Length: 366
Image (cartoon, rainbow, N blue to C red; front, side, top):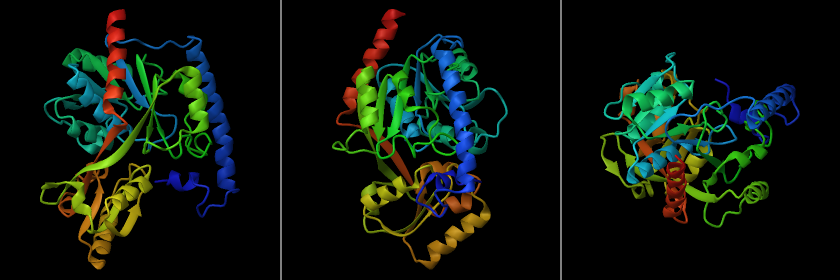
């Protein structure tokens, strides 16, 4: 598996000017042109978006991974339930090996697929939302219609769909990492951008993630938001709880002073390490893997050897990584799983009021 994060970083062992990056840059120019032309076709309604029979909310970004979409989807679904809606989550199911056009990960009662068939993020969403249907498939028009027909839902949450303009969205939420909202500034595959920052004008609101209340908003983002009248919310990610090998659940404060060996395969591994440091854990080793990494026995043996050799108290990873370790139950019995959550700052209620007002307006316009 290619470690794209390493390639995109300009401070790693790959020289800034190198044949690899030069080739990737040429491909990124082609990618940028294709994305621009496609968006123009949709903006001019030459290409049409398909409307479904209930409101559709998209949670997406303009960069590849690492902005916290999954915690946002989970928090949004719970919020909609509190407001009396019956939501379902539809996702493309990145990493899924199921070729079917519609895959029921959860019917709102039972989880029906494993991580290999569903993808790690949809499975995590399904486990976090036990009474909400979760469906994957490449064509969101089909998965969305299946959710409406089979489960009678009245609002759809599209995970990672900002660029998927084939389906009409009533509310577009875009997440941007506060520290690197535009990645390294290059388009795929040279960088992390999926489209031009100008595309942010299509959003109904922006959530800056992994931020504190005083963190300055990127000037380019602030300019786009101001010009388009887009509200900007702030969100922090934090540990909600720690699941021990014996399945006991402890508050994250229990990490304080613990000697840990940590590993993860997520888009922003540094964010996980930062949370461990903020929890005052003693990090003896930290091993990052590529995002969505499929662990093999050799990897797990190496992790165990490091853990035992350093005489650590805990071997820890993220809940998302735990989804990909379900086929290694003996290893799962050794590790502590850290569950994360998103909190909107300064007030979750302000975001809920914004969403409620938008949904009320949609129902009135019918």
